[in-house]
Length: 125
Image (cartoon, rainbow, N blue to C red; front, side, top):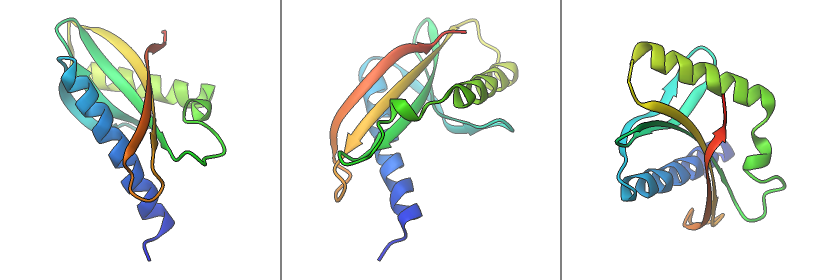
């Protein structure tokens, strides 16, 4: 039997893969995944013609007690924003940054995506 931690990571990866496909279908190029800084991690960094898009992905099962968006606290937002700034300092761009959030609901057994909610410009700085 697989460990709970392994299953959570696998579920999260399934959610991130789905969001990457969603972004690619809308003309974005994926620049980085799981970018880490001393403050935290950005799940997906993508870009289109005018924007550099930083995405926080929360993957849950239908029976989760709290939704993905509910788990994004003010403290998490501050750390996420610092990580975005770290990336932009190391990878300068003329593109306008935008922070998005995605909530992906997957089947608890198969990790098949059941639903996704995507919020553009979820955090304004």
